[in-house]
View 1 (cartoon, rainbow, N blue to C red):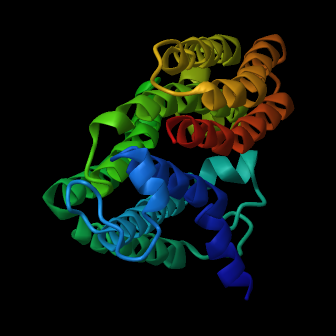
View 2 (view 1 turned 180 degrees about the vertical axis):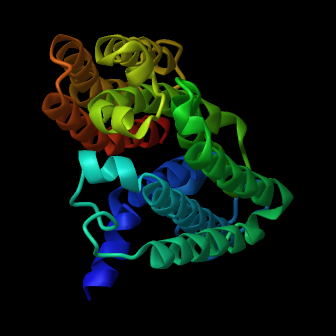
Length: 298
């Protein structure tokens, strides 16, 4: 039971759920929103002739596929980060002894294979995106996370790719590009904050990140710039009539205050404890942003 609990924690289930929600959001934006909303009636058909049951199956496959692939990347990352985690987070499953290294590696492989298998219903484009995600996660874990900004950008790009993946499931990629941009900026900022929080362990392990290369302060200022850019860009869909007032209301109440507070707090107090707190706050706010896009579009 202790090992099973450790494997569950290695997969970071909260992150996997958020990833699945991102895919679901992209799938909704993949077509007519009213058809998507009404389409949960049995055998409802879209104007394109696509049956809702097909949309449900493709979307569910994409959500599970993305969540499993992300979980595989998380597990593999912990396998390679055992030295830094023993300093930064000794309670994590591998450094604490809950899960052995061989068990963690096998678990990562199983998750990745299952995630790729679930991409098959999405056709060639979906399979290609799933393979790209696996390759990018492996490249990040093995090499890119030790290159300042490159690793952060890779993770941010994968976060945006989840919405594109959902768009493929929903038969329409174009409209999912907007939340993909939002996700890229959001995760770029959060990843830089996480790097700054992990600076001591990364330095001890000889890992070169934006924080270890340039310092926690500059890394937090870059993060704040990305988050503030998101705050500015996020008003665009409402200003140009792409999303309705419900979107603006949710953004104004549930997203902008978090972005502003996180940016100011990270710059003013780049201590490990404060940055970990901010990272958690930002993670909790992710579903709010996804909700704003879905409600605004519907």
